[in-house]
Length: 103
Image 1 (cartoon, rainbow, N blue to C red):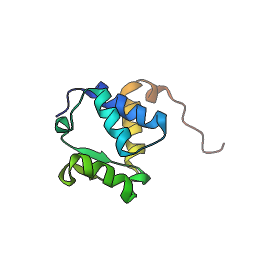
Image 2: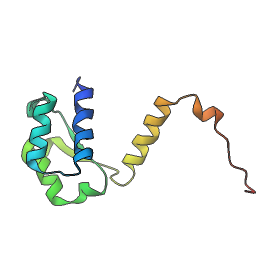
Image 3: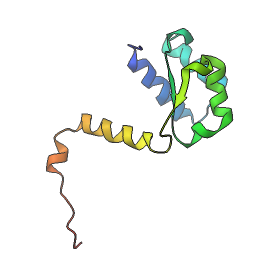
């Protein structure tokens, strides 16, 4: 289990910011996070790009096929964002306006 979630979030943020994903970028970001490949229990690939064999290969080559998984690739990002929003703004859902059927 990874206890260093801020480092993992930083890795994901950096991947998004750079807009590139290749093996060297993953290696660089892992090094910058202070995590070793052995520290990773599971790599969960999600989103449409997780279907691209070259993307999957980047992670399989580094972490091993047994650690690379995925699921609900086309809906898990939206589900995760909704769950995170509920955690971050728990009181907002009660005060949100519900649109009228006639509008």
